[in-house]
Image 1: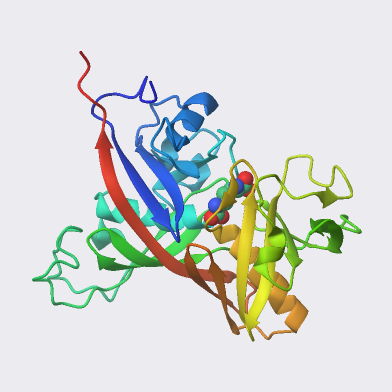
Image 2: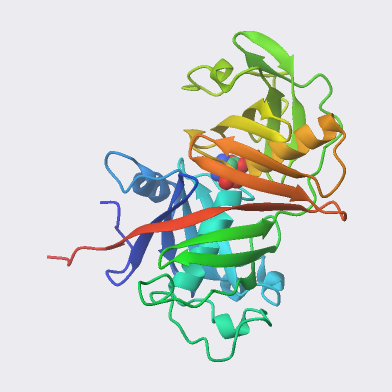
Length: 319
Ligand SMILES: N[C@@H](CCC[C@H](N)C(=O)O)C(=O)O
C-alpha cells in the first residue's frame, strides 16, 4: 500500500505549479525513509495519488550533506522524479514548496526578511485571500535549500492556497564539451543548446511545438551517450518577439505540462540567440500555463509563476 511506513499522522498534500504536479510529504525532522519504489507508487496516476514528482519537506539541519545551507534556508526541498530518481533541482517544485511552507505555517512570516510587512498584519495563511480580507498582501522573502544550492523566493499570496512566486534560479551555465549536440525532430537531428540549470537540459528550436510529436518516448539525443545521467529535452517555438512556447520531455518522468528549469533553459537559449540585453523580459508558455523571466545584470535568472495547493490527504486509520 502506497502509504506503508508513513505515520498515520502524516498529512500529504497535492500541489502544482503550471500543472507540474507534486506530492508533498512533511518530514521536518528527517525521520522518514521514502525509497524509490514508494515514490513511484505515490506518483502513480492510477494506483497512487498521481504526480510528476515528490517533494519531501525536511529541516535543512537534518538533511545529511546539506547542513551548511541551514543558515540561509530553514527547509530543504528533497525532490524526486515520478520514477523515484533523485534530481538536483526542480523550478516549479521550488514555487510549490515555498507556498506549502507559508500556507502550512512552516515559515514564520515575521522572520521572512520582508521589511515592508506591517507590524499589525497578523493574518493566518487561511485568512489571506478570504472574502473579508481586504488588505493588500506584502511579499514574503526566504530561502529554500536544494541539491542545486539555496534558491531565494519572493512569494505573493493570491488566495488561501495559491501564490505567485518569483525564484532566483541562479546563473545558467552553457557547459563546454558536448560538441555537435542534436535532438531528433520528426526524425531529423537538429542542433540543440546544452544548458545546465543545476540539472541538465537540451533545448531545440522548432517551428511549432507540435513538431515534438507524441513524446511517448524520450527524444533521441546525439551523439549517443552525451548525457550518461539522462537529460531533460525542451522543444521551443517562437510565438512573438521574446515570447516562446515549449514542450518538454523530463528525465525520470516523461512529457509533463511544465518544467521550470526547462523553461529557464529555453529562455536563456533564446536570449543568447536574440542577443538580448540583460533586463529583457521573456515569457514562456507551457501546456499548463505561463512563466515569466528576466535575466538580471549580474547574470542571475528570475522566474515568476503561479503555485497552488490542491488538497490534503491523511492516511486511513489502520484496522
Ligand atoms: N519539473 C522540474 C524538473 C524536475 C527534474 C527533472 N525531471 C530532472 O530529472 O532533472 C522543474 O520544474 O524544473
